[in-house]
Image (cartoon, rainbow, N blue to C red; front, side, top):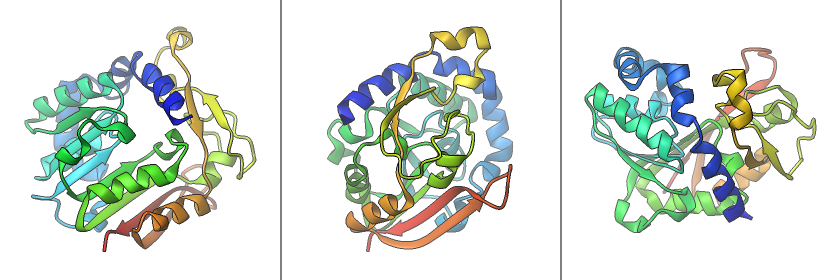
Length: 253
């Protein structure tokens, strides 16, 4: 089933993703200027857990358009992105070049990185926003995280809160099921759907996703042999009474 998800999602993410990012963030040259000025803002959720990023090797799994990776590179990190979309890779590398930094971008399924062991070990593995729902087996992705972390390396995960995914209207989930424990594979709009003109959205492919509970996520991280240090629940802008995002910090010790 994971192979089916990966195939469908690669097709969806390689159809107009570059165009969507230009629509949302501007050309790579325009985004580069914005990142040079505001890179600290784009890293606001994580710098308190990273410390000084300068000189650190950071792996950004499912790094998409590269805004976080480029922001880290601007602070002196050696950053590698792994993402399934060639269009994401193109936009990211063009933006990095315009910003005057280098990032290594591997276009691959995160669970099938070619010659994975050759990419080495990292001080930080970062996964952020809209990532876990692309996996049917959390043990597989968190085992990858542990393999790629060096001694005392740190895993940083920020994603949509499972409660929010079940109950709130979000950009990539227009029809929440109101069932926190819903574990069906679902076909939903690709995340950048709303960034494109309405007349072009019918040309987009759907993605396949699977929701997880917070218990699923925490258990799988622990099972992978990572020591959970922190779980931070982040209130939503629409209704701050409820969590919309969360961050988990886990170390390889």
